[in-house]
Length: 459
Image 1 (cartoon, rainbow, N blue to C red):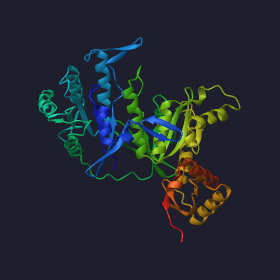
Image 2: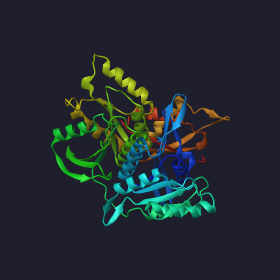
Image 3: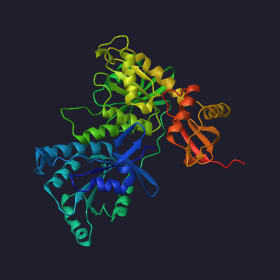
Image 4: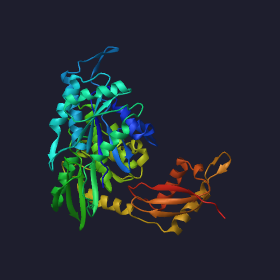
């Protein structure tokens, strides 16, 4: 079952990011260093009383200051610009979250901006089975002493229920808050996963995700039934292809309308993350005209984080002026930008004209088949021996990593357990070498490979 979502919402400078760090752990909250990409962390897992959930931060929106030459000048908290930013932030959080934490500041008390945010949140709630959804928990942050905790009662005026006085900086009161959070998760019946292959169509806005989906459906004309998606504003579509049931997960819910606020842009990435989590294979759709963007790289990183198989779909290929070498040059450029996913196939299409769209589903089936491959132990160990003979592991403090034997312990994704003298002697560059040697024998097209090292004392 999908992890519940907790969104942090509130005006700037109330401590949303500090609370985010407190809930998920500071080492996860800022950046994640992965070979090939470094990106802002806008969400992370948290756990309380054995319940795992995802926390998303709407920080990064700071509309109360505007650049004015070399300095910044404050804007009125009630300004139209500020309210517009907060409205975007709150509405999208309401769409995505299972619980919303409305963060306020005990130090400054109730402000006109807090009142506006409260009104936006109330208007955005929906009644489901007799209760308002998602539930909103009022958090009064920066209650660092007894006097401020006692003053938190004034926040009852917002009409958002009981205020939880906490100090995100020191951790005071966060236990009671987390009890309330997990107590508000909507209990759902255990869902049976759809049979067949789940395929997420992701990418930045206007890359052509919906056009690709429509073209696929228009060509196949084999829709079984539209079913409500886990994401509340998306619709999953089931089709049959080569007698195999396929669920297409569309993430084209957010479109650019003029300038998009940072919060909206970040949530569009988060929506893709949720779709990726539910999928077996991901179609990363790229706009050929604009090329690889930072958002494309971010989404590709999330695909790799989730150990999902993938295909890069370069859409709008019809608008590119081409010669004999254009496709190869473009492919090399993509692989340079996504150098941490060089095992992923690239397909050039035009959803508008239908060019090569008929190749999308067959390639997806091929990638999915590769994801499920299980190599015999004897063959895998022969590959390991040949790799070590060609290039022994480099030494560390005078010691060499020794791999005694290995076996594939699972597929989906392919996972290999290596019995070694000391896992601490392993380095990702040598694991990358082993992966490349393995792919020379069996490519595992479009699918990440995971190595797990286990200490083993050789008799």
